[in-house]
Image 1 (cartoon, rainbow, N blue to C red):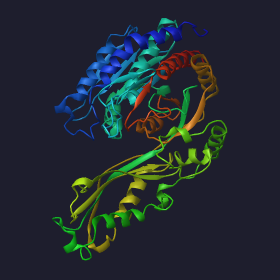
Image 2: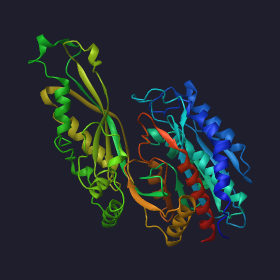
Image 3: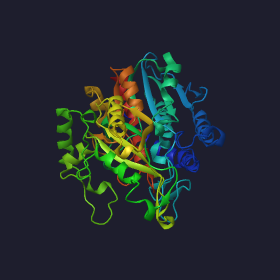
Image 4: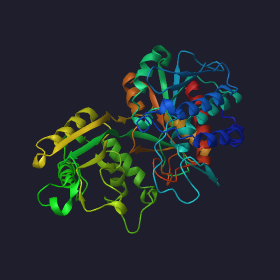
Length: 471
């Protein structure tokens, strides 16, 4: 059957009347991911968020749907919504739709009138933590299925999985996937809503995701802080030693990672894709530059590859350093740095972690006590080629919803679920997309959900479900 011309208007009403009020409530819940709130169960914020989304989901008029909070001892939950095939499609074929409901911590720098747990709507933007990353995914997934059924579209069996540990590296998800077992079915299509876009004018699909490894580097030189005038020149600075150790891994002049185990060859098709995207789009305006700061690399194609296929190091946190306004003349006893490494999609994250650990902890300068722990590693993902039917379906869906055909690009972030599903179901097709466009600033201050893009992506999902069933 052909597309229903009334479907976009129906989706727009769903968002305006039934989704925006509830996602506004969701943004107000400080359900940060388990890594950042070890007492998450006692604090109850995650359970509040899960119940809010469960109740909204269970109330949807979707034929035959079951809604379950899948729980395992000691682990964050997963929302599981199972929808049988509709309008003559196959129950033996499965579509998995994926998102997450846990959030990053608050971060500083929110502008006046905004805050992570204080949702504010300004025009098309709904500000607050977690709306775009990735609270909207539950609403978009079920609204798409609801709209498809209302339009009489066929769709195969659907399984919607919304996890609660993605921002902690999906540490709890593998156990849930193992426990769900045969309920995962044999998916021929996976649609993930946790990625980004380069503009608001089309559906962007992600063709690769970087891997991630991280940990906490700690350098101890004393048991107590001492007067810097008395000790400096004799007692080594823990900060200097930490800086020296980082120089083993990163060239501070260029940012290039020095360890071979963190690099990977860039496939020719991904280089060609970066060149094609660069011919049409610039990412210079994608970031909130301060003053005269400019990119580390020149040329849009090279910038696209640098943010998707080259390893990087970011220092994302520090301990042992008092606020500058309260910093006395003290030679501090230790420095602790949180290190986050983004890895090429095909890099082995565990081998990379071993190389990082060896570089940081071997032969410590001045006999300092050096540790690198609280580590994690998750390999990236490189998409299989799009099947011809899917390429056509995405272009048709994007044209219906946005007025323009789909574009593809590599994403610099990480979604561990994609690697897990890619290994389990190597023959599946993947549609990785999302609403994280220019200045949406996920993980940072002033994060916002661009509501028109969320609506249009919902339309795209419904149309792709139809095309998948009719392929």
